[in-house]
Length: 93
Image 1 (cartoon, rainbow, N blue to C red):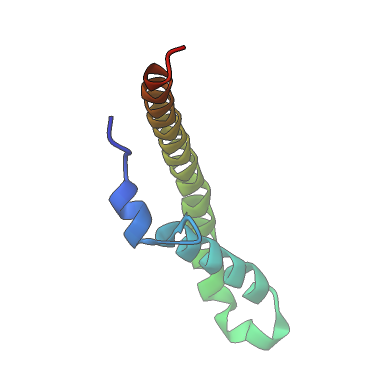
Image 2: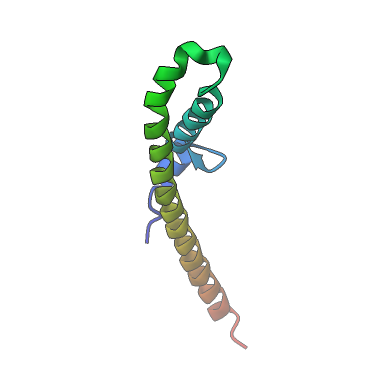
């Protein structure tokens, strides 16, 4: 059984968090910090337009990250079990 998205996890993730999710989360965070701030009043209309899709995308991607992590955990449990079972067969008393 191969680990799904293991190549993508290694190449396109920082601290185990996919870059796409980080981008959506950071975009939503900046949107929330900018939205309604007097200093960024000139960007308010643009933030109102971008904030909802960024936040929705971030929420949608979290479920994919959770599913990928669960699949990877299953893979690790299976590999550890196979390794443990072969180790036990070597030490029959």
